[in-house]
Length: 167
Length: 180
Image (cartoon, rainbow over all chains, first blue to last red; front, top):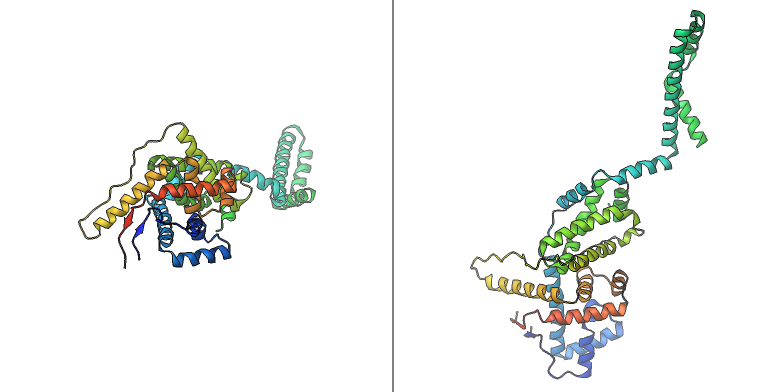
């Protein structure tokens, strides 16, 4: 390979000036086919312009080498530092709410469970009040109602279905 | 995991997906920051700040395919702000070359000198030229993409690129040996 210089072309012709002005595009493959063919033809015949192209490509290589040197990074360490500064994920909270809003099944189950819990609480309170205040006969009647109730899991499932149907 | 999926997972609160994005983009971002800030510690601090901003604003990213350009715009804005505040420490902390006296030592030193000269030239470029050269060469963005990212015209991007390269060429050794 010929010795490279970055000195100016000694006796540039208009073709040399055109080619050298377009070297970045030529090296990038960004020229139109006709222009590229014309410039490549000139480069075959013109050693200083060939040197200029080689110099340009060497420059790009050096820029890339300079940029990549010392950029090795421990991504886990950076992520840890960033996440530590953020604290508990606000995105997770937002996502939970979004999931609640978007998912009818989840909303249905949650409403069903809430309704079941309210029902249990109400019955417990009622039973307690009746137990103290009512006579024996009324209390026995209430206990029969409890015995006839379906199992709680069925109640929850039923309320969930009902809620899904409403949503 | 592709980029869009990783972004969706981060938005869903999966922190592991954030590591995926970080591993993919930290190297190129740090390269850009290093060419803007020259001091390694400054560059690493700004990189961390870039990811923090990105995490906090990820929901605003409309097009996941533009993640890289979006991250670069955050990083460049932060780097410019740091320049303005005059925080840059000009101490160049590049490691000294380890030489062992072997036959490759001279060549290694020559290469490192060339890299050091180029970095110095790069740091001395006007900010716009430096950014365009970095985005074009290191990130392989088109002039159209650079124009959008920096808020300039395509022609201005092209002109800054040519002018920047002309100045950087002077960092290369005037002559090089004649390889076989």
